[in-house]
Length: 361
Image (tube, rainbow, N blue to C red; front, side):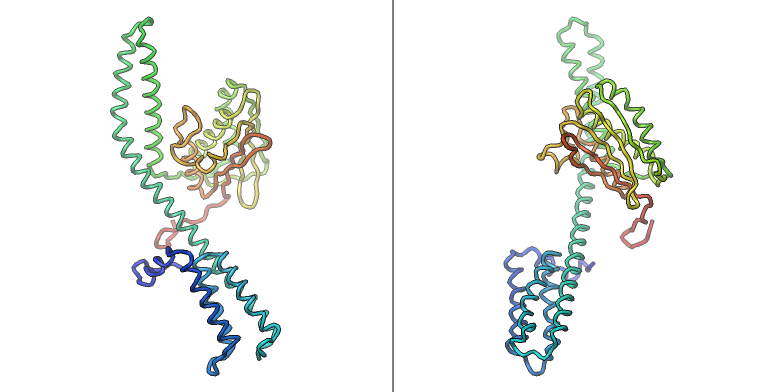
């Protein structure tokens, strides 16, 4: 289904996909009506009836191309209804009933196949558009970050000098502290923006996920103790190593576990567990915090979106990007009765990446 974008037919098809809905549906019903009339009411003597039956594939193909799986399946249902007169032999058809049933099965199979292919193509197109959008946004963010970085550093440096010269009783001292804190926060945000905009090159090696989780838990233990959070783990003992960038995965785990600690109330528990399933290693970070509200669920992985007052909104966006570069998935689900479960799914073996020319890397 990869058409040449300079092709006239491709250009006409692209325009047709954006016409109003009724202009898409009318040709399908018109085709069905004409084919039914020819097949059931008036059969031209020079056209075999078997060929007329094959014409029913046309509206099924068109429905699948325009509306995907639902369109192909619904059109196959309509064609099945139009075949009822053949089963009861209302028009004294010369073709056996068994042949009609076989033909209907093929209609459903054909409509389903066309619909699935179209839906997959649309999903891949949407993913490409999202990637292009993220690339453009990353370039814009990098340009803004570079322009703002030097002035912010200068403001922070001069504020630091003034702060050192002010006495403890000076009323401006508290205001200078606020300025320094905000400068540091903006510097951190600009660093995240620059980091997000840069392409990530993975340094792959064989990684023991369980061992890495234990290392991360040791690192974040002081933050958990400060908030009276109990860290625990339930790690599967039969996990094989997998190809991954150790530093990048370490960064993702550190970010997700810290988020779970920050989202939890004192004296609650954060659990990290692993398991192997269907060629994947599944890592779950489970907390019993307030959870993610319905208003935030669709934006939680968006860059610069954060529910935390001091957050930059880049941690989850970068984490998701890193996991997807590992050909895995990062998603979340609700933890009952309260809290959130963030899940990382990493493949045990990597698929070869395809370039635009189809050459594996």
